[in-house]
Amino acid sequence: MNDEVNCTQSKAGTQALREFVDRQSRSTTILAALAAVLDAQVTGNSLDPVLQARIDEVLSALGVYDLIEKYNPAQLKHLLAEIRFNMLLETKLLFDTKRTTMWAHTETEILKEAGEVSDGFADTLTRTIVPRLEGLAQRLDFPDGSFLDVGVGVAGLAIAMARLWPSLSVVGIDPWAPSLALARANVHSAGLTGRIQLRQQAAEDLCDTSTFDLAWLPSAFMPEKVMPTACEHVHRALRPGGWLLFAMANPGSDPLSASLVRLRTVIRGGCVIVPGQAETLLNQIGFVDMQTLPSPPGAVVALIAARRMPD
Image 1 (cartoon, rainbow, N blue to C red):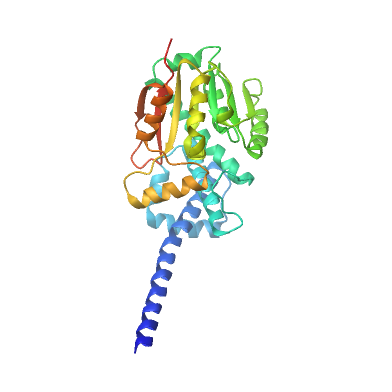
Image 2 (image 1 turned 180 degrees about the vertical axis):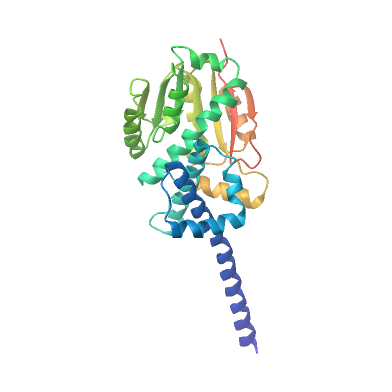
């Protein structure tokens, strides 16, 4: 009798797991189908008619096309990059030989899509963040305006900022050679070698003093142990009155969403720092005028702006 009960319970557990996998795999297929449609719209390359019909069936049933119409081509391009980046990176969890808890990714596709994601942030930075920070727009417009891009990657953000601010010079630092190889090619292709300097350098090894008007520091890609030193060196590298944008992964209040954010951060080799922790750290170093910048509901990134004390 006990054997029959155990067998029944085992079958029920197996079926429950099977049903769970089936439910979750739907999301993967839906995102992949959406990415195919976005790619076709961004590139102008039509999908195979048979594939298009099946994708249309899925996305129309979900009402996704109504949402796509609200985005312009540039926004669709960056949304596509975000989908690709997350899916490519998280696929590595499937294999023991590819799992890692530090940024050790050499795949061109992953590095490229990470750059596309950061490229998309430059417009938001220029339109909605810079005007909130006292004196920053004028600094970035000056002939000697300077921007420090910590974790420059393949230079997506650096190139976009140089294009948006024609007088701005940019220094991008990154310890990861595979990213920098692509960055150099991208900067050369963009015709910006005279305005963007790239260095193989970690933030904790930064030696500049009073050089930059704005610095970008993405904590979600940096180990927690280097954060205090990195922030100290960035503080020293800013000109008096210069601004730091400290980016953090935003766990939110939902337990599942928070767990997923923490997992994604581990895959990226970074750490989860909540605003209170970041403010304490930056205050101890000597930053002033700290403010948590508003984020859209459900945003996966939170930003703190902080300033080096003006003269």
